[in-house]
Length: 181
Image (cartoon, rainbow, N blue to C red; front, side, top):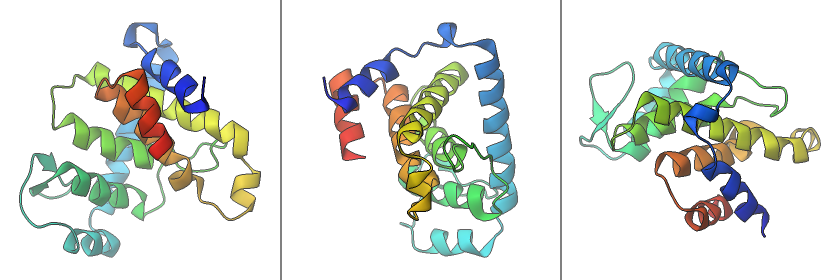
């Protein structure tokens, strides 16, 4: 089995009822923290710049700190920019970066486009965080020392895993998504 296939199998196996209580508590804390820094960062100039180059119009997804809504991709980008703008977002030494910045804005936007419970989002968040962490153990800190920014380069795998889980993609679809990431 390929690495992407093995990861996909593990991502699909996440179930809310199987999660350790502490993992759920920390996931809730991280999500709440990210929303807080996202709101605080929403007034920064960099967020306005990103907002201005996005597709104008409306959509189902909230732009934090505004009453505006947009499509899921633009919402995830704008809100992700806001959540990292002040650099007060969470940090994980294992990842060598900020794990929630790529995860939370994408999960909120995706969750707004389909029926998703809080448990679904928490489970997806934990699946994504775990995926980022596992891949990071194989590349950090050499990866960081070479000049890569793990928030982006590892975060894409966590976000792909979390999104695939929330969308209930098959193992094959999840493996393909990870390979594309």
